[in-house]
Amino acid sequence: MRCSLALLLVLLMTGCMSDSSSGTSRNELADLVLQNGDLPPVFELFDEGRQVRADLPTGPRADPTRFGRVEGWKARYRRVGTPQTGGPLVVESRVDLFDSSGGADDELEAHKLEQEEAEGTRLLRAPVLGDEAFAATLTQPGASSRVRFYLVAWRENDVAASLSVNGFDRKLTLEHALELARKQQRRIQASA
Image (cartoon, rainbow, N blue to C red; front, top):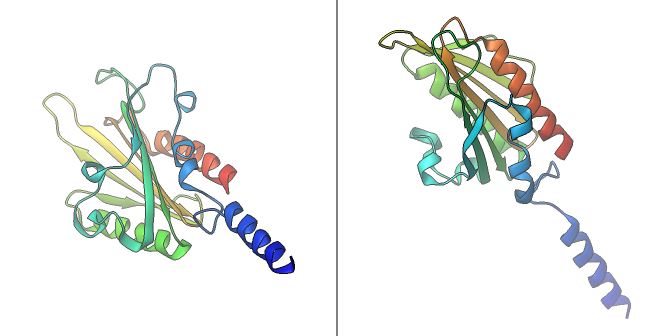
């Protein structure tokens, strides 16, 4: 009887534990990316779900099990705009769960290194977000207007998150990206 009770307690405790040290589970990942209500109503969701092989970055982060990665989720939004439209036109929100905070830290460092080595990309002053973060920008010339890209990436415990936005140069600012990143960070903090 005593052995059965001890076994039952172990099983119950194991069943209550999550996949990671922060308390975040695979089942919560969909809630840790930006949701429709986090963006103005002019945005439409055009891609959402588990990250699949086609969503993986190239290079050292192409391995879906890198650094103890458990799983990832993404949500992509867009709206119609012209070169006079202020703010983002396309928003991509991602989150990756790792089996440890060390794995998430390695992910963030590898992501930052990719940005440092990418031609034309410039690292910006690190925003205050999560346990650690970085931001980068890039402009791409267009036929009539240049397109500006911002990336904000951060880590909170064993979760690595990123937010990418693009819009027309001089109409999109880092603050636009940071405002959305903070909304996503509040979702991540609430799950911990």
